[in-house]
Every structure is written in structure tokens, then in C-alpha cells.
Length: 236
Image 1: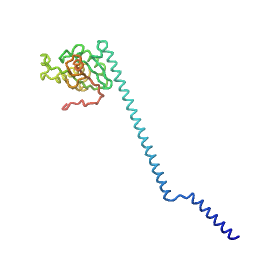
Image 2: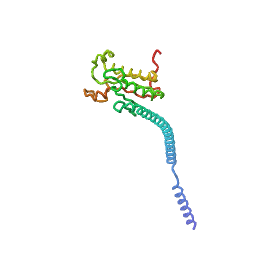
Image 3: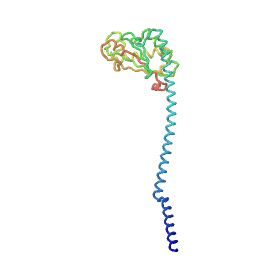
Image 4: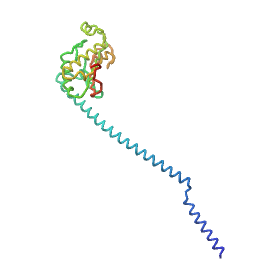
């Protein structure tokens, strides 16, 4: 009887020990799990920090987009206003065109000037007056760029004003003439910068075809946000 009790007690102890062992986690494995949880927590915290930065950046981008959109709407509305003014002068898209993506007005040189000349025509003067009326109260600066076809300068009247006989000089003289007309109509000199490309930046094949030469003879006026270039002249 005693041996049976003893054997039963031993069996119970073994059984309990077996049950206890099934829920035991070794120390090394426990430490690994803790470290894994710490690493995962750090990943979550970093991801959350990155999301917060993205949220701030998105808000800034959205604000910039709204400002740019408002500026673009102003550009477009002013362009429509000028187009309406010019419509009464029978000026069409082949004479004057606006590129909204570049903020650029293109004026055909044949509209603004007599052939081979840097003297503004009556229609050219009136066109530039309308341009100045539209933009002089706005906070823009203006980059005026003169372009020519590739024909050599040979006319006596043209060579008199262009002693170098270079199309670069003719393009610059036309830029100056345009700027002077704008200044007379209320756009301050300090708001303008002038440039000539001569026949170096054609928009049509630079050949002898009359329609291509007409397209290449042009003056471009880029609308620039205030502060785009330094208007201060050295020494002044």
C-alpha cells in the first residue's frame, strides 16, 4: 500500500513538472522578443514622424499651389483684358500671342516696326500703349527680347542705325525702342531688362521662306514676378 502511494505521488510530481515546463520561456528567447518589440516600436515611431513631416510638407505645397494658381489666374485674366483691347485694333493671333506656360507675350516685328527698321510704327506704338495700360499697375518686371530673321542688314536706313550690320544690334535696338515706348506709358525703366537674340533663337526654320522669316522677326516680353532680377544699376 505504501509503495503504491509513493509511486502515485512521484507520478503527480512528474505530471505537474511537465505542465510547468510547457509554459516556460527561456531567458534568451524572452530577451530576443523584447528587443524585437523595441525595434518594431522604433519603426512605428519613425514612420509616424515621417508621416508628420509629409503632412507639413503637403500643407506647404498646397499653400504654394494656391498662390501659384492665384498668380496664374491673374496672368490669364490680364492676358484676356489685353486681347480684348487689341481686338478693336484688328490685331490677330499672328501679330500678338500669349503663352500662359511661359508668361510670355510675342509681338510680330512686322506689327511693331517698319521692315528692316527699329522705328516703331503707329500701330506698334498703339499696341505697346495698350500693353502698358494693362500691366503698369501690376507687380511685374519685364524681360524684353528682340529677335530677327537671318537676312543680312543691307538697307541704307537700317545700316545707319546699325553700324555693326549685325542682327544682334538690330534686335537690341528694337528692344530699346519697345522699352522706351513702355516707359512713356507708365512702366518704369527699373522694371525692365533688355536682351537681343538676333537670329540665334528662331521659332521657325531659319531659311529664306517669307512666312518663316516673318515668324522669326519678333519681340518677346516675359512677365516676371517682382524681385526676379536686381534692378539696381552698379554705381547708381
